[in-house]
Amino acid sequence: MWKCLTAIPIGLSLVDPTFGVAQEAPASQASVPEQIVNAFIAVFGVHPGARATHAKGVLLEGTFTPSASASLLSKATHFQKRKTPVPMTIRFSASTGVPAISDTDPGASPRGMALKFHLPGGSKTDIVANSFNGFPVATAVELRDLFLAIGATKPGDPQPTALDTFLNSHPAAKSFWEASKPAPRSYATLAYFGVNAFKFTNMSGAATVGRYQLQPIASEQFLTKEQLSAMGPDYLTNEIRDRIRRGPIKFKLLLQVAEQGDKIDDPSVAWPDTRKKVELGTITITKAVADSQTAEKKLLFMPGALVPGIEAADPMIAARSAAYIVSLSRRAQTQ
Ligand code: HEM
Image 1: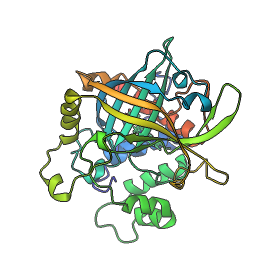
Image 2 (image 1 turned 45 degrees about the horizontal axis):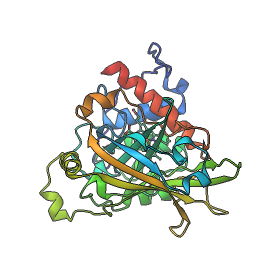
Image 3 (image 1 turned 30 degrees about the horizontal axis):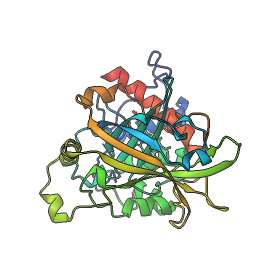
């Protein structure tokens, strides 16, 4: 991931996350989420109107139908038994802040899946997941430091480079960096992982801590190196648009339930696969959004957009949400 990228330094600009007037500020006065967005842009380059990361994406629409067990875990509206399914917007994406990244580029992994549930009464709640079960670092500060190290490493630097030094002192980041991430046949043939933990509370007040997982009904399918070499730069975007014309695409939404001793506040540690997984419902994707590029500019998927019955259990979720708002305000001002 991000291995292919060269650093492109830019000036720092602090933007008021409430969408006020942009002001210049020294990096030292910027919040950690602002520093992270600045570090992403320094590594990935300036791309007006684009997300600071996961810049290349495709939007689709569908619905969510909760399972009978969902309401036992959470009182959240979309997890209650209902006559009609909940409308959804879904965005699949490639990693990095480079909007033109080729789908065949190893840097495009992990892929993202962002979900927005449009609830009765007009409120919304989101899930933002990716295709790797784990994260390179435990905290937002470490993510900033990782990207500062990537940005500070130039081809031909003497060893150990700034990046070597970071990876050597952060074993989870090293194994994330070195993990093989085969290219998927389709966005519809990947499993996606929420990675951060949330606390779910049901009508009786009973709480469960868990992490979301999305399991493709089409099963996980990957390309061989030979098959990948025959693919074009937008093969995943084109494939999902073709696939949806042939019929619905389905995912099971699962909750991997934490056991005593599982790390709640460290997404770099995946919980054992033997943990209980409760089925929360089925996502049925039914159509592609016609002008995806225009529509996605107005959308913000945010891991901290929650409703009663779901709370953040990992402090990274608040830092993530703050960074997503900084990125939104930057892209709104530059498009
Ligand atoms: C401290 C940790 C993290 C930070 C600071 C961060 C930051 C960001 C930012 C700034 C964006 C662009 C938002 C926008 O402009 O709309 C973004 C998008 C995204 N991030 Fe993160 N992220 C973090 C952790 C994660 C994790 C743990 C995952 C996966 C489990 C993830 C998956 C995604 C995906 C899929 C998108 C694209 C969302 C969309 O389609 O609009 N991120 N992230």
